[in-house]
Length: 329
Picture 1 (cartoon, rainbow, N blue to C red):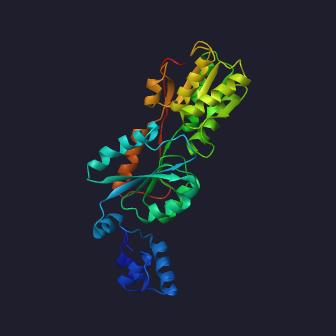
Picture 2: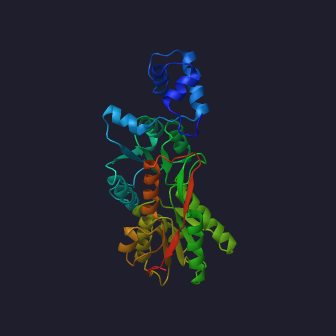
């Protein structure tokens, strides 16, 4: 075959079937025997054929759209309501999509229905999907069903991704606190299943071990209440804590409230560094020193990759994470 993208006609020719039969198999429609389906599917895999989802959308009368997908884990993260991360993803995607008249469709996927819902979204995709917050296993599942997908979080090696240096960012945050003279540096971690939270936990652990510090940590989720509860518990159990690394700015804002409620000062008694550089960091009191996650740039790059139809298995682009110094550390 030529180096051009294989067409459905190429599939039909190589499989020795009509175009209509090849189309039925590819679209999982009735009217083809099991033997024919196996033959066509083998050719599809061999040629690396991928349906033109934009053409599919046009033929069906659907507008071209990019699906924005996030799996929600329990209470505390309201979809586009209480968490600034998703608003920043939209802020990055929308200018790119508006330029070509494409829509964005939002999907908040409950954890208990994740696999079933992921399959439905993949089957209905047109331009493809940006996987804003999804586990590696679910991302791989989606990518097997729809090859037009880009993850915004660390994921399975086969899935195209925009990847921030969460490990390095967390390490840099702890190192900064250590340079400020802090020696009892606690961490408020994000959700146990969240890929970014896992990497930030890894960065914290590497830093405390490298610096010869004691690990002091609790899970607070990616929301204000969780950060408040985790910080309160840490301060009760370890009154000599003099710094906190918090894996999300919203949780860090809650941690600052817990610290001041205990009669301590930020940063005088306890320095705090968050992660994201979201609106929550600017609005906290005091404004948060934080690690800037380039969410808008990552989301724009993911949308452009889908529009260019340049999604290839294993595609990876890394983005740096930078320290933003404000008043909390």
